[in-house]
Length: 226
Image (cartoon, rainbow, N blue to C red):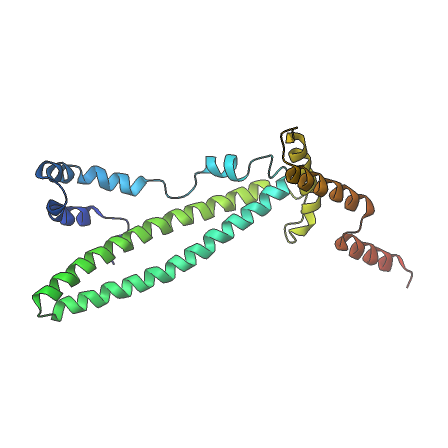
């Protein structure tokens, strides 16, 4: 396998072919910048930083409780896990394609086909290097979501059943949204926010959530004499 995330050789190898696209001065400049361009490619931002995760994804108005933040971390982490697994399968296919092309190059006698296989091989190796870079950053974000989950899990909410926190969290969310309504807000927006807010407050007062009833039944059974 090509050394992970090392495209310096690929850039240098492709530089002469840029004569077909660039004028000589630009080709010369490109060759002189290969080390810088590799550094740029290696450290470029792929996915979200911790700052973006905290300020954009987990912002307080949308996720006002630690429970809400924790469960959003679970969702985000799971998306990245599933994407990483899919990327792994794609990477295996590309590695198989690289091996196939290497074999074809060893035995191909037709000059045109041989040149095409070599171009395809360079392209596949570049794609594989990109996959490795993406995989690395997906794993970085997966680990960050894990750290944030531990931070928000203070023992005050259920970390097994997402439903258990939502009534309280949604109550705060809808109260936040209601406070932002103005005379310029559209009728559907007002209807939606106030409708959900009123429903939440009614449900909390009535105690009609199924998990509340299950707890009551369990408590009643536990209080009966043997």
